[in-house]
Length: 294
Image (cartoon, rainbow, N blue to C red; front, side):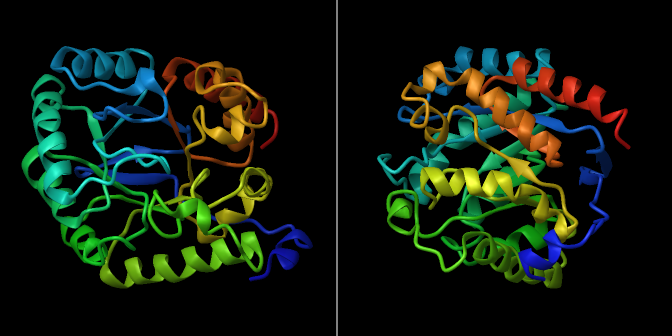
């Protein structure tokens, strides 16, 4: 379906309101907040970097105490200037952290940020990870889709071109929104054919997109409900905020909250953030407003 036809019709989509987490349904009718923990030395927001055991535990506890329902653990920085880790290097960095987190928080909902299929498999089978968050949409490791189908866990399908180190060289689109919609249509169909039941759509803010394209994507976010799957938005402290405002990641909390609010008003089901308390407040305020607009 073309964007123009969606604009010209009052189209209603029946978006899924739950995902299966270890046999129990997580209700997404109230948007959920996913807190970020980076087991990295080079993620763009320094405060999110946690490598020592006590820092990892403190950060997980903070996410939970501030109202986050999902902890997203990543061992590979995905900025254009980061070092690309091999599967072996990522495994060595990630698995000890997962072991520690799971021992301290046995009932927490864990998401792992990886594009390696074998890492996804080990994380789920050994540490009970609940969600696989793949920034590459199965493009870096072509076994990822089949492995996720075997594991039967929710899969975050993100839009990106190339790899993080080259993605900003791939921002030429015939039609930004239409091209991205086609990408999701094709890849979601493949996942569904393999038997993946819970697909979460992540438009990939900041990945293979210029500053202006990121805002165009946000303006058209509601049209991604055409897939009738939950939408995850990850714009926390990203360059689309601090470059527009001529500031820094450390000064981008206000901009993050504004964009999270816009995303919620467009129907986002999951906010992936560094600042959990503030994101939870956005969810509560938007939820109160939408009580009167049903």
